[in-house]
Amino acid sequence: LDLGDAVACVVCGDTTSESKPHPAPVHLACEIIAVEPANTLFVGDDIRDIQAGKSAGTQTAAVLYGYGSHELEGGIIADSFQVHHPVDLIYLVR
Image (cartoon, rainbow, N blue to C red; front, top):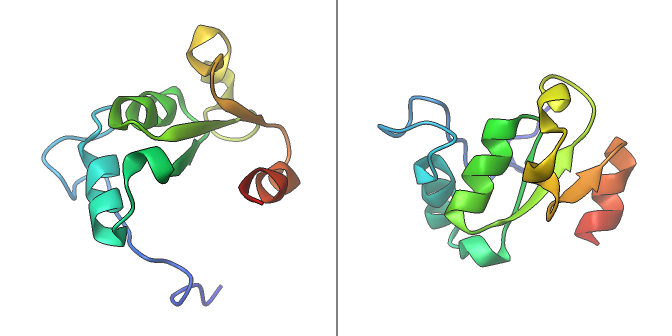
């Protein structure tokens, strides 16, 4: 997809000693891109994503379709933005 210029950093499951839902990977990504967690939108389709974002102090958006979306039902996403379609992210970010 030639996204190299659009990606500021990549943090994988083994980049830090802790993995999601621990906030360490999110904190590292924020540090690399020099943006405070409170000014960051962490988007995820799995409950561990939402937990990690919240623990790190980011705003969170729960993707309600795809890989882990079935786990996102319930209270964990109550104060998260809810994304039902990819285009929702465009409106959310704007």
